[in-house]
Length: 325
Image 1 (cartoon, rainbow, N blue to C red):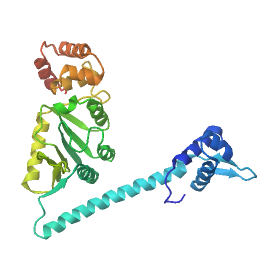
Image 2: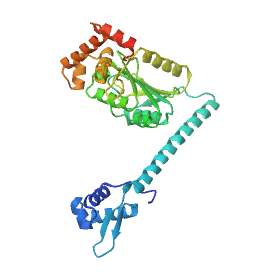
Image 3: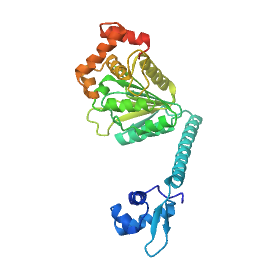
């Protein structure tokens, strides 16, 4: 299979699915079943032959038979994965070389200014793609560059073994859909906590690069601004700031996150408990989870019964003492 070939176009995918469904067929059969024109079907089948995904029985009206996709497509996917990893390593090496060269020239720039939503989104993706050990996030309400659910670079980092810890501001968890995105992140390996308020929006990668959101001046049409900080006392201060808020924040537990305690609360109850202790109101929890407010209260009542307490403050103390959260 040629290395430069894409995996499959839409027409090629339709043609291949048609062959698999029918157990083989002629150009006219594939065109009808795949809702393609005769020319599209013929071109797609020719591409499948070149890709090693089909064979043809010669004749006046050739019959095409599908071949297993794993060998042909698997090799292409492996090459792409290897190319992406080579590219990531190259970016990291060039980044290290740039920083070393800057120091030799008499001191590296303390901060790089990024202006505008799209440049900021690109810079955030680059910083995450270069991370090799850990990502630290402060997520405040009303994001200025990446809305909840848009940060696919974090999932890519988690998939390659990078740790990710996130502190969510309480107000950010009240936005519809955010809790679902938080739960998905936790199930993929993110470790999340909630707190009442955060002082800044921030990403720190490998404790060596920080992206710090800056205050936007009234009437500024240029868009959001951020500082990318690579060294110095400011970077150390931001890392210490994250560590202090992380220690004080409340862990968020989600169903499917492996949080059950033998003889104690189940995952759904711990999820509600973590949100309540994190300061999210009952009404907002019920709305986000798609249940009634009374259901939330019943789960809390059962938790207080398990803990042997009759107040939410007592429940929070018991949860911390017993390691529920």
